[in-house]
Image (cartoon, rainbow, N blue to C red; front, side, top):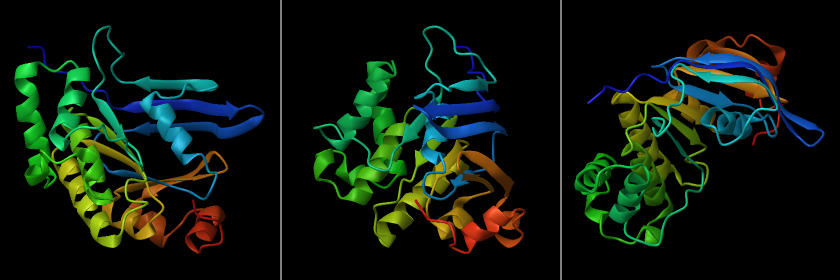
Length: 242
């Protein structure tokens, strides 16, 4: 069996995205490398979610280029996944939710149950394998969404505010799951509205404002020695949160 080639680095070159007459993402250029956990921060309307959807391929840029290290091959699925703030749960068990995702991804029937159970075990939901996904708590559903994505064995996992609607206890469980996924070798790219969470989980920070990439820095430097007046104002709470 041919070993999968790496998707990374992911390169964005002068990427813009317009919605009608409004520019949402404005000439962003960056390279996402394997390894560091990348947190995306910015005030309301900064373009964070749109940028992530552009990276994941859910949207096409109005201008500029988005290039993976390995071009997409016909008949092959990219080793990337995305989890949203409010994931959609199918009307079936937690285990069956993951098995269905594996089926759609073309994973052989003989492998699906084993991989699904392994993913549930990894996020601490093994005991709820046969529970209906839609009756799980919000935190359990988010961990199930992470398990469903992780079962696909992505090289890159995009996370759009995965703890935004959760209480502190459930958020902590999700953070532990994200740390485990990262430790297993998956690149994490995550939007968060929680500065404490960005400090805990982030290795590097991308700061967007009004669609522009204002600053990119290691997390420690970003929080302690911001390089721009916009970043400093944001950290002081002088720009509105999302």
